[in-house]
Length: 374
Image (cartoon, rainbow, N blue to C red; front, top):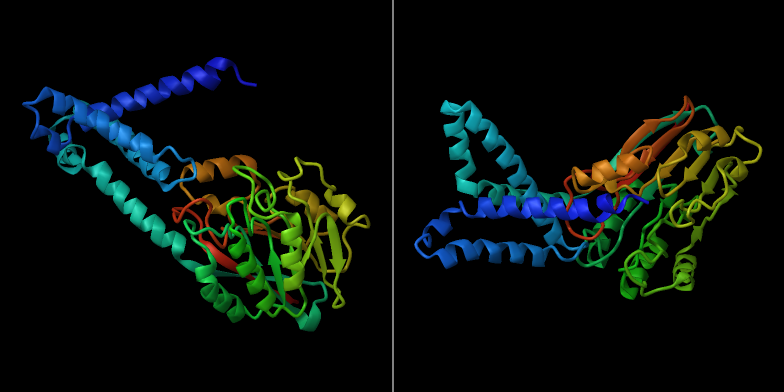
């Protein structure tokens, strides 16, 4: 536990300092100059504006907190630059004064970021990776499509209305294997969304099978009780022909091994070790290792993993907060990483977004991995 000063007192001091900074900046806004002759309006309207920002950012899962966070950040940066320019003086100070527009610039920048972040979140990409192996593959190649972190919800980037687009992009990859690496659903998923996406997974043609590992949101109650239970999820997956893997491995008839781990956060770390999942260690079987959270890469490689597929991080989603948080907890924030000469890890940015239609880091994507035998 941290000292109470750091837990409770310091955050309140910081919040008070930010409120003072915002209030002083709001007093400079050009519209307020029109009412400067009326002190009650001049000094009172900024307070109302601050209360409005506090109201729209009250929901930790709402887009309002993202808007307010960016606005406060731009004001903090602008205030720092203004203090520096005041010391420099001359032309730089004049140029900065023009650019700052008496405090309107942070609002314009925040509006642009919100527009751009929404467009980026809703753009569904197909990210392709090509890797090689000396191990035997069926017909010398293996194509895997990874779906991760869908979080279907009307206010997020992915819901049932986008299933036709998602189906088309998956079909275009012509996967041999479909893997679902956790947080496909969460505690905000409505029953109709669960049914719609399970139906989608049932329609996908993947000759070598479809496999699912749980994430920290699929059945875990972070924010509220979900509208479905484990039995509903298992029934939906079974109907779709998707196999749920929990600390277990499957040897396919073609000789490829699929290993699915329980999620580290969901189990609070109480799961099999990598060595327990493949007791014999590395062998000549190509091993696809599914683990929602990108951690324990070296142990997985040592156990015999050739390809590790993870999600969880959303590629950061909201920069820089997401990047800082994810780098602090995980071994890879996004993309491809060579773990050993024979093992590669790939972390998806997520096929959806968490909480809202907004993304300034990572990609909303399906991942298509082409493995070729050399």
